[in-house]
Image 1 (cartoon, one colour):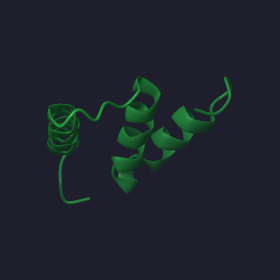
Image 2 (cartoon, one colour):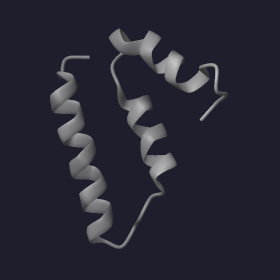
Image 3 (cartoon, one colour):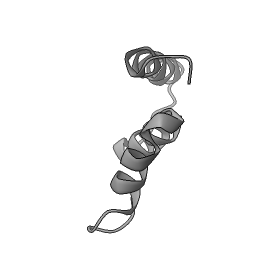
Length: 58
């Protein structure tokens, strides 16, 4: 919660890049899910809306 969303996104992208460098590739759906889970509690309503919206679950 102490990091800004921009900082968290940068950290997330670095982790994804690091994994790709060791030949660990994640599907886009998996990346999206992990990104949503990494967002701060202040964005909990957004996470819930995206995960459990009208179209169904991720």
